[in-house]
Every structure is written in structure tokens, then in C-alpha cells.
Amino acid sequence: MNIDIIITADDIKEEKIKGKTVIVIDMLRATSVITTALNSGCKKVIPVLTVEKAKDIAKTIGENCILGGERNAIKIDGFDFSNSPLEYKKEIAKDKILIMTTTNGTKAINGCLKADNILIGALLNAKSVALKALDINKDIVLVNSGTAGQFSMDDYICAGYIISCILNLRECELTDIAKTSKYIYDTHKDIISFIRKASHFKRLKELGLEEDLKYCCQKDIIDIVPEYKEGAIV
Ligand code: MLT
Image (tube, rainbow, N blue to C red; front, side):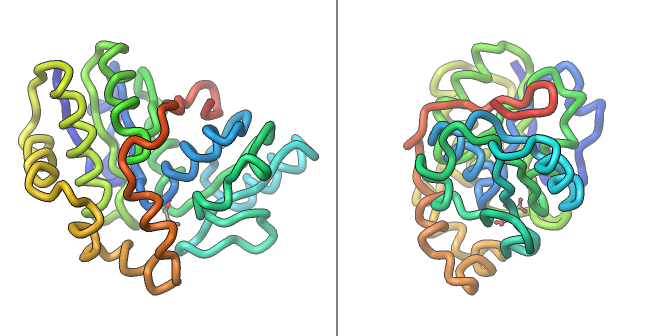
């Protein structure tokens, strides 16, 4: 089994993901939100590219749905919730359909539709997503959402941790970029200290979102693996 990494949503190419299992990562914060909301009993998450589309879908579905997401890390006008995973507690998310649009994460998910399987990964569910990807038994591509088309340290070290979880279970062939992310993780196991220097970490900190940062940097506190199928993540 081979493991590769794509470093931003803008770098996704059909030939790199076709026939493979992709694990989409936006640990700060879209894939942490999706994992948390589903773990809180949310029925499904519909990831869309634009604010207009999200509002249209919400109108069509009606009462049972909530609108969540961000632009530039800030809650969108007219939306019910922001992109803070801490908002998606049971009392909010249970039995709801979350329509979600974010700057990078939902873009990366929608960019992967040509893959055979699309799993959603974060530090929060790293071990479980590693196990599920191995069960599927196809080559794996970790798709880092990145930040506005730029490489991001946070998604890269998260990929390194997921790779390390995979290699604990089975030997695999890694591309150089995958080897490097595992090396970064192996030499910086205290992830929050490493990503303090990341630009998106700094942006969220400036916005006063330290509790989100601490939450998203926890490893393996959730054991569900969200999967995108036919337009929704379940
Ligand atoms: C994104 O999808 O671009 C991010 O999750 C941004 C954020 O942290 O709000």
C-alpha cells in the first residue's frame, strides 16, 4: 500500500486521487468541526462551496437543518453557527443536518469527488481514521486543505501523526513528502508547540479562539470516522 500527501486544496488533481482512499484534513478547524458535530449526533453534514448554495439548501430542507461555517475564520452573516467545534455540542447538533461552508476545508472535500473513498480526518480521530483507511485496503492520499492555497504546518503535522498511526498497524510505501511529514511528527510529538508558529494558528489566536486551538490539538478523543458519500458526510 502506498501513502502520499497533497499539500493544499488547490493542488488536488484527478490522477493523484483516482482509485484511492483520501483522508481530507483541515484540523484548524473544518474537519475537527465535522468530526465533533457527527460525534454529537448530527445526522449528516453537507459540505458546500458557497454561502449562497448553503442558504439555498437550508431553505429546501427546512427546519431540521443548521447553517455553519466561516469566511476568514469569522462566522458568516445569517448563519446559525461559526466554525468553532466547541459550538457543536449534543444540544445543538443532535438529529440536525449541518450545511457547512468554509474557506478551505469544504473546498478540499469537494475537490476529492473523484477518489474512491473520502474519509474525514483530524487529530481528534486520527487512530480511527488510520484503521478505517487500512480496512478499505487501497492506496491512501492525505489531502491537506491548507490555507488559501498555501501549505499549512498544522495539516501537515496532522498528516504525519495519521501516517504514524497507519505504520503502527502495517508497513506501507511512503512518498518523500509523506516520509517528511512523519519525520516532522516523530520529532515534534507535542503538536500544539509545533503549530504555534503556523500562520492560521496565529490568526485564530488573535481572534481569541484559544479554546478551539486546544480542543483541535487533542489526539484520538473521538472514535468515529466521517465519510463523504453521495453529497453528504455521515
Ligand atoms: C477552513 O476550512 O478554511 C478553516 O477551517 C478555517 C477556520 O479555521 O475557520
